[in-house]
Image (tube, rainbow, N blue to C red; front, side, top):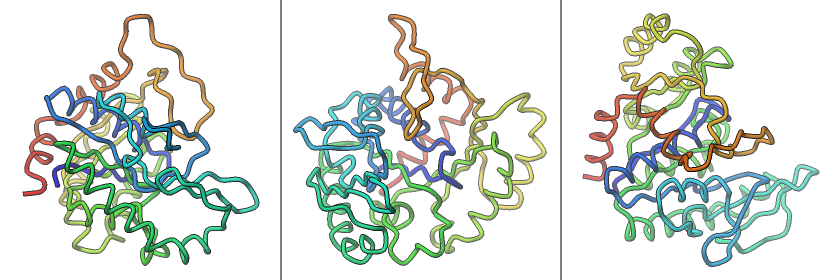
Length: 276
């Protein structure tokens, strides 16, 4: 299928926001775009068009894509309830609270089926998918039953964009380490690297870009400056966003910011040849 998957070197590097921008940018190209996240662990949820409970992040991404949010965009929702347990929902259907080990043992096959079904349905209705990963694809202790990163990229057969957060420090090491821990066939899916939440003069990071590209052999396709108060609700955060002025489309403004700092023609070409 045609699309791209956004993965991160860690949680909270900005995957959700990058996916939101890509949804709007691809919609601007005249494509029918659908966001997708196989499994989202979040306290924040809302209702899909038919009333099923889904992640708020994918709901907002659907808005950015100018499409109706449907449950296939987030087939599995996990809501932490405390005591190391979470409520689990498949296509909006709730199951009893369960701990992580039991979930991995009891629901793996059901999860794979739900993901495959959702991808097939979305592929029938849309031109391109913007798929969001979770956490890091380098969690080797979880690889045997992971259902959020490279297994999904394999199922959808899409290229991967790797995002690192430079604001917290250690971006270069996190990029190199993440790629080193990937299996060769998965590393080959990574077609670009994005440095997110940058502060200061990008020219001062040129040496870092050169090192990353030389060491990994993968192109740095963008260095995105940190943008405060973009107005879009961020996933799993209680940090308030300043509301945009009347008449301002927050998705347009965020997408323009991202587009101005990435190699959009290159990324678009990668997406267009995916699935062939």
